[in-house]
Image 1 (cartoon, rainbow, N blue to C red):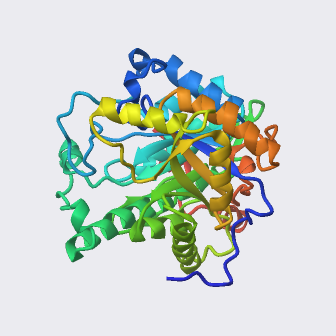
Image 2 (tube, one colour; image 1 turned 30 degrees about the vertical axis):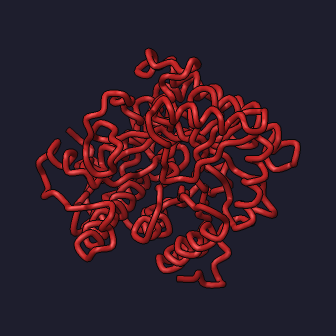
Amino acid sequence: MSASPAVPQSPSPAAAPLHLAVALDGAGWHPAAWREPEARPKELFTARYWADLAAEAERGLLDLLTLEDGLSLQSDHPFEPDTRTDRIRGRLDAVLVAARIAPLTSHIGLVPTAITTHTEPFHLSKAVATLDFVSEGRAGLRVKVSGRNDEVRHFGRREPIALELEDLDSPASLAGLAELFGEAEDYVEVLRRLWDSWEDGAEIRDAATGRFIDREKLHYIDFEGPRFAVRGPSITPRPPQGQPLVASLAHRGEPFKLAGRSADLAFVTPRDPDDARAILAEVRAAQQAAGRGAETVHVFADLVVFLEERPGAAAERLARLNETAGAEYASDARIFAGTPAELADLLVEFAEAGLTGFRLRPGALPYDLERITRGLVPELQRRGLFRTAYEASTLRGLLGLPRPANRYATASATEPATEPATAAVGA
């Protein structure tokens, strides 16, 4: 599928500096990383550990960090649990970790992962709105669907879906994916409507008159779909960014459609620049089909990185980690092992395909994160490809995304709410 030539909706990488994100998960993305000398496995479930990683990422002027999450223990299998005991298993709640580290940082965007398949959009909308308030406009959200039946059994509210990695193109699997990602698309629409359900300035806070809110500026969203019926309004005022950033990870057809239709930022996993061009065409086509052709949707490539200053040393370290793990490391994303300068060369090559940024997955934490912030970033700055200071105070500002207009504001100016808004927000 090729993109329409009338869809130049995202900034040209040739004209704009690169954006950099880092994906934080456990002790790093290599399964043996937690056994490295620099790892801090005893601190994985402490606030200090995540605060230190966030501080390092912010020290490197990165646009944002993401925090992985799930509703079941990590597994080497994408759709089933495993019984391994030599891997990190267990994690903290990503949204809560982001809220904890938000006051400890000042500029970097905070993008936790949340599952759309088993959670309620109303709950998540106010949690992420709260994160946007406590971070003063630096919140985002990476929406993730679940195809694991052990997670289905945590809730007991839906039937299992049969997904097999080697059979994802079968009619049954395609139908299952369409259902899961269609649900995620509705979920994001509900999130955005709830964030808009309070107009800007709905809080009057006038102690003299006794008016705290203007009820005419609170709106029912009245979303009706096959998967959700949500009335609203939210209980949380409109977030500082209007709508916090929505991101998604996409590997194939239905995820590409979700990214183009609903996300502000897509993380993708190209193997080479030609693959990146093909992926971009699919995302842009979905964006155009959804009537979002005029909107900026960033597309970042994910790369797992192992970095060392000496040529060849990173590959040696990766080999040592593989030996410790007992198997060669594999990933959905391309694996890079080299020097910061070699990685900078690769990022430039990928950017020329049309990508506007990169999300780097450190192979080992904090080691490879420090090689990113103290090696790669200076190299990109030397080439004039990365910022030397934060230039905006919000995540949307860092990514050049506008603050969305409130969809209900115009209607409010001419039409009263169909029912007294206080009836929905009262006890």
